[in-house]
Amino acid sequence: MASTLMKKYKFCPLRNSWIYFVLTLSCLLICQMSIQVACAQDDIKTITSDVRITHGEQWRYFKGVEKPPRYWTQSGYDASSWSYGMTGLGYGSSLIKTSLNDMKGNYATIYARHEFLIKNIYIVTGMSLSVVCDGPFKAYINGVEVISNNAINNFSAEELDISGFIHELLPGMNVLAIECTNDDIKSNDFTFIPYFDVFEYQGGKAQ
Image 1 (cartoon, rainbow, N blue to C red):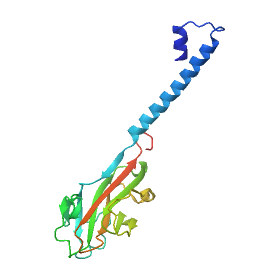
Image 2 (cartoon, one colour):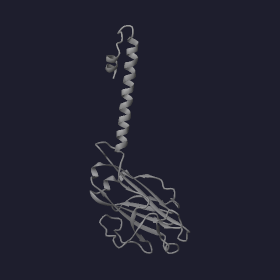
Image 3 (cartoon, helix red, strand yellow):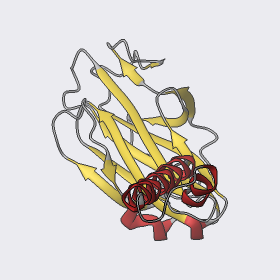
Image 4 (cartoon, rainbow, N blue to C red):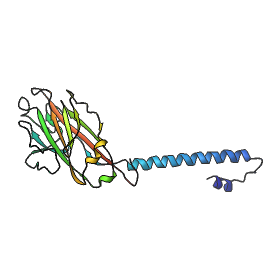
């Protein structure tokens, strides 16, 4: 850019050397800022979530009138006989998309599964999970417990970094399984909404 300006304008090397210095310095600063902006824009393009589970997703769920089968948290378990519905699951809340009108006074726990596809486990850089649950919950990736929360109310779900369990992912189909319990079986409301993201390298860069 400096050479272009020097060709366009004829400066006297001696009398206007300070002008040349200022222009050169300005050009260097502009180039540096342009590179930083370009890199930032490129990074934004690579910030992607290959797997995103959010409010309104379809989940298989099992009503806790009894314990579910032993291997319900594991990948490969056949949950085709389970109920199927969108989150939020529950009752007594405007966030509910699948009503559990028989839950109050009958059972306090919901067991839910959601399968997700990982095409390449070697480019996964992170995972995050947050769970809206009116009581304690436990979450599993392919049968391995990754997080549990014994809080009475998790209505304001905190995003939790579970990247330490990336090694539990499998190439192909995986499963996120969550056990969510109402803190009071006679409560007038119950809400279950999980949010889950798996982040990957894109274009040779990590997000």
